Image (cartoon, rainbow, N blue to C red; front, side):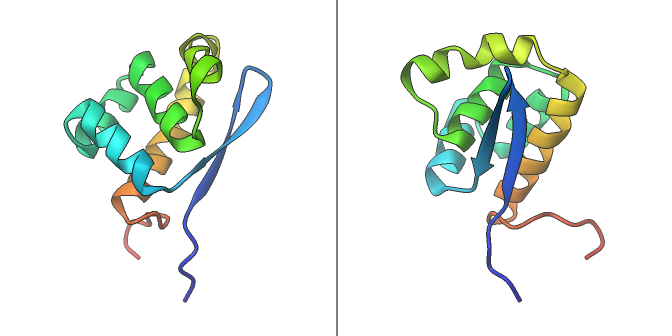
Length: 103
């Protein structure tokens, strides 16, 4: 049995970013949205600010890189990006392991 945590790759503004599990990412996202479930709901509603926050937290972006994320999200395929962010958030809820329905 593997204990490896999830890593989700996304394409944003021509760059590949890797969203990784970390306790800091979980705390940041949870604190900003009053829990992970509301964050998942916001991402499914295509809330650009929450999508950017999840990306920044998951990729560990700060400063200028973090400030440019919302604009990059706005110019992306939001439906595809939402699916990947939802997968990432579900893994965070599962201790960083991929969430599999019926497994």
